[in-house]
Length: 194
Image (tube, rainbow, N blue to C red; front, side, top):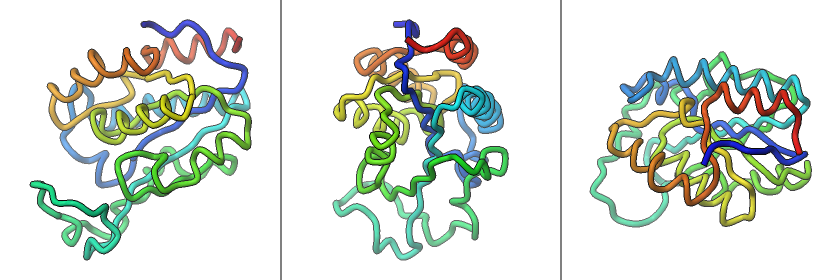
């Protein structure tokens, strides 16, 4: 469903646009393209006095703060360079932005994101970032479960595999909220919120 309206209190939540993840080979958009669109969204939200939350994932190299459970995925944490988890320079540094650090996929689990948004009266969030099927989808699911109206900027996100991106955009996101392009979201924001 295309974006039809914004609540009077809407926030932008940008997932994991940090040094190591932005440089990974993503599809259907490059990390650079995703960052460019996220910057465009952040600029529009700032201009309208709407909150922007920058979410970053981090982990200790020894894995001691990782979520418990056995997985088939290898642990590459020890090989990550210094500063891998820093928010990209193009987005970092706005004094009014909310910064959230997570250690799992969802920006809501084990963080104060929900508290920060509710303190500001936020009832709707727009999501962008990396990766579509992991950080963005997990956060979208949690936002929906927390009772937020969810909007997804589908050209401001990408994944490591096109099949994973498409599954989220085509099958999962329509169950959680509305989807639209960065341009459509910026234009809707400019028209005013409901």
